[in-house]
Length: 147
Image 1: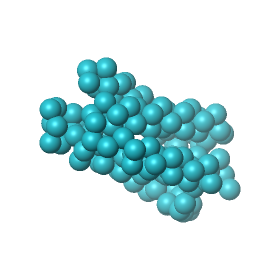
Image 2: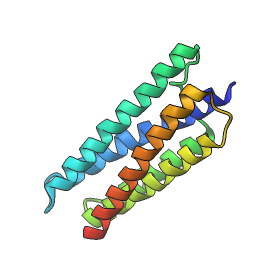
Image 3: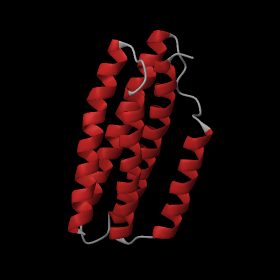
Image 4: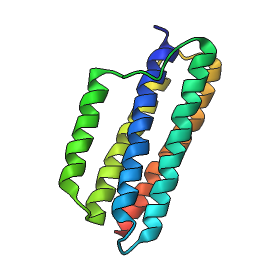
């Protein structure tokens, strides 16, 4: 398996987790004191969906099927997020803390991907997406500080 395919599989799993996590967090915050936070999290969920679809389409262009389950470590991380989510309830501060934790993980997945020998075209996509993921992490942490 090429480094592009390895990185793509992990990033797609992480991005799908982020899409679902942000959507769930937005649902929890929608009726709270700060519905605008829900709007921000919903926007980030849609961003993640666009990112993973872009990577899957790139993989298809190269003949790789990167839209399959990722590693055991990724599955364990997803399980931890589910457990954490079940415990946080609807408290805005706890929901934002869980989202920030997820974002820290996403940033580290992009950093790991960039350590691999990626093709020039895929590296450009990963670098661009990483910058947006870092900005999203900072945005979530700013909301967390405001909570």
